[in-house]
Image (cartoon, rainbow, N blue to C red; front, side, top):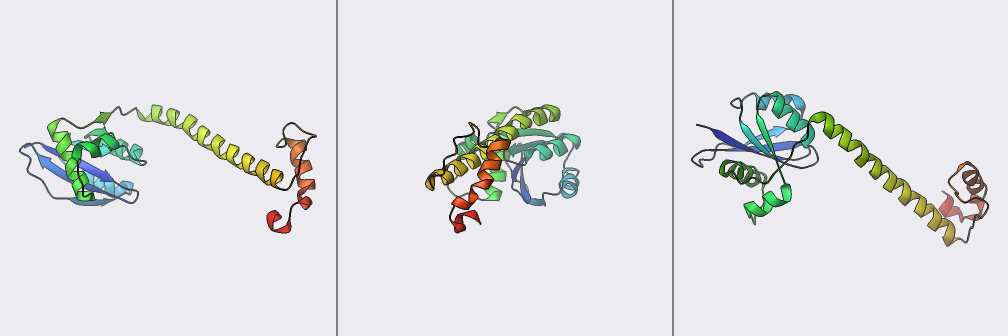
Length: 181
């Protein structure tokens, strides 16, 4: 009899639940999120097993391992899946069971799983955007700190260029001691 698996993934562990075609639930299994333990668990499942996994932060490597083990991973839209499960009480076991049930019923709100190489290519601009946001935030904080103490640097249009940074360093003495340290 075919089984459907749901995986509620967390940072350090994943909870697996299963359900057969007649909606009979199987046992729950908690698996530590190390590649070896995850891989070992996947090899205990029947080949070609469908596994539903929420699209949370650490799904890349899990999907890769599921595919390598010969299973059929389905990536679920986490927000829509939660709404469809309609659970008031939220536990790892209920989430795993709910994902397995949605998969079994054919109602899992799945999303496209890009190939590994494309995932990496798509991650590069995301990471760059995140770093640019942090850089902008830090520059804005420096501008705000200078403005708080009426330190105006007019000599450079970009105070973060080589000359502007040198001038800022020479004017740090104008800041109160507690601000400099």
